Length: 280
Image 1 (cartoon, rainbow, N blue to C red):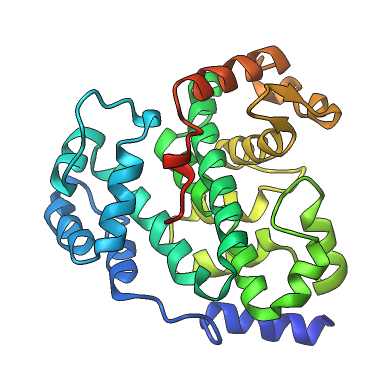
Image 2 (cartoon, rainbow, N blue to C red):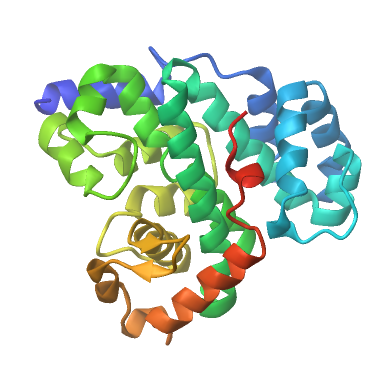
């Protein structure tokens, strides 16, 4: 796209023009972003009126990643055990993907969702090692970091998938997007999340997750998690050669061995299980 076309596309995204209508449940969850536990009753009401959201949220809450010894069978119990912020952020991530993914082929949507969840899980886990940001913010940013891919895919349809060659992130997708469309999914995701009034830290982390000059702890953690997930065979615990470049002075002592140990802990604990990644 030339400059004028790019500006029109940005205006469309900000105005949510030519995008699926944002469901009332999502709008209600976004309105609770600045709330504390006093908003728990409203959150329960919002989630419980959406059966698909309730089912997916409870499946995530019961995943091994959250380590609950007792089954989480209701939304109020999920809030009690996991906390208001965690449940709200899970619901937010699920509904954003649902709202934007309706016009994306199911197989591609499932692959992108699986990558988003794994990145969210790893970003939250990395905060325990790097201590650079809030774990809940890292998890939320991980869930939302690739929503710009859905926006571009909805706008350009088959051309998008022809450009990137598929839904996986083993290749530099952002560079291919830039070459063809003049903008990448990180920037587009930032436009949308800013228009939805999400917290500036989340917006900037999403916008910068492919950048080399990420500023702030959340942006650094999200970018690192995304790169390492892309460059690691999570099942076998093997790093691609590119991953060695991810470790340095700004990773607070985290090295390849430490990362693979963390991956093994998450994998053995079931954090990458099918029940966590499923989009059904």
